[in-house]
Length: 285
Image (tube, rainbow, N blue to C red):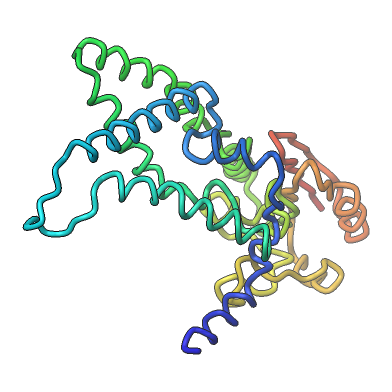
C-alpha cells in the first residue's frame, strides 16, 4: 500500500515511453546484437562465444572448489554476473508481453559490465599468453568500426544536429539582423519531440532568437517535452522580426505549410539547406 502513490504517479507518465514497440521477432536481434554489442553482428558473435565460455569456466570451477563451512557467505562471480545479465532483460520482456511495451535495448546497457566480466573470465582461461593477446587484438579489431562510427558527427540516429547548429551560427554571424526568430518542427526518431532539442544541445547557435511556438518549457510543464502554441495564436511574436528560421525534419515536412503561413505575414523564402534528416530554411521580410 505504501507504494500505491508512487505507482499511480509513474503510470501517469506512461505516455513518455509510448514510442517503445511491442515484442516481435526483431526483439531477439535487439537482445543478441544491439543490447550490448552496439549493432555489430561480428562483435556480437565473438562476444557471446566468450560469455558462454566464461560461464562454463565458472561452473566448472564451482564444482571443483570445496565448500568451506567456516567461510563467510559471499556470492560467487557466477551468481552475480548471470542474474545481472538475464533477470533485467527477462523482466522487461515479460512485462512487455503481459502489461505494456517496456523493452528497449538502451535500458539494459547497465548489464554490459557483467558481459565484460564473463568475457574476461574466458580470455583469462586461455593457457597460452600469445593466444590471449591474439584474442584481445581480434576483439579490438571487431569492435573498432562501431567505436569509430559512434563518434562521428551523425552517429546519433543519423542526425545532423551539430551541422544544423553550426550552419545557423555561421549564417547568423555572416548576416546579422536586429531581431530573428525560429520555428522548431518535428525531429526524426522522436515522435513527441521537436527540433528544439537541437537548440538545447547547442544553445549558443540560437541565442537571442525568438522561439515563436514555445508555450511552456518542459522543465516548467513537468513533462518530458515542452508545450507549444499554434502559429496562428502567436502572430504578434513576429512583430519587428527581420528573419525567421525553420528547422524541421525531412520526414514530417513542415516546409509547405510554414512557407504559406509566413508568406501571409510578409516573409519570403531566402535560402534553404538540406542536411541529413533535417531541413533548414531562412525567410526574410
